[in-house]
Amino acid sequence: MVPRVRKPGWMLLSPYTNPCLPKKPRTMPPTSAALAHVFNPHDLIDPYYIAAYKAYKRNTTGETRDVDLPLPVGVTWFQRFQTNFMDLEESHMDAYLNILRKRQRAYPDVYTPRVNLLHTQFFSYLKIQWRQIFGPRVEGKPPTAWKMLEHKWPTEDLKMVRGIIPYGSRPWHEVDYVLIPCNLGREHWVLASLDLREGKIFLLDSFRQQVPWEHRLKQVACLRWFIPSMLHQIGFHDSRKADDTTYKLSKSAFRMSILDGRHGVPQQQQRYVIFKILFYPIRF
Image 1 (cartoon, rainbow, N blue to C red):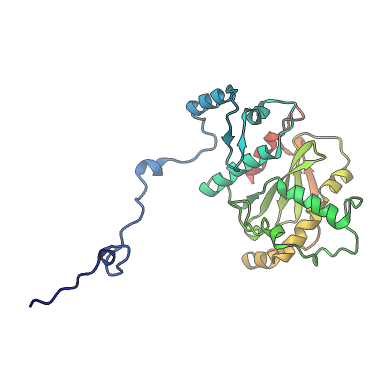
Image 2 (cartoon, one colour; image 1 turned 135 degrees about the horizontal axis):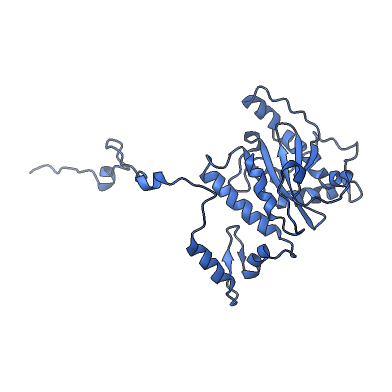
């Protein structure tokens, strides 16, 4: 009787399971056409998409679109971009910043990776925390009994500082700037640019208003005092010193400066057209 020969099964013969066989590439190399494409943010939009957008705005059947937040919106959401006398909602800011984060992640050679883009909820949340910790009557500066470097923040509150959310962010010790859209007084948008190397906050104002300096200082007090406290709790200073031996940022409240048209910030003629300001800080 001829002895039975035991043959290896098909799973062992597969190059993905048998370590003795050479591995096959899982993905095909990019074609020459794909390598030739270089992203340029100034390229003109395809006329096909412009025509489709115009046709959608003429649609009165209540059709919605997902703006990738995810947030299904209707035609009126897009019409606000062309109306000078209507405030833009937080979702308009967040949708645009989400696009920038995706482009920053996909094209690091075009959009610098040393900048974090946060959504509008961060500033709103810090204002709520300020009122809950100090009360509604405390403005500008916390009481002397509050120790900035000893305050303990919950883990959920530190997810943005650690770079966990929003998607596409990086831990703050790996970036130099953090951009935060801020709604001041429920009617005016500015962009806060946090310089983590110098401990400064630059308020980019696209519509110069006759507002006293002390009033603006009170409106962003939550950023000036809470940000250093959060950075201290996550070990920001130690991590930064390990990467940069010349790092000497102090653990005190951030200083603030206001930048407007005199400093090159794009200005607008109408009060409510504030979306343009978000394009300026990309130069960082």
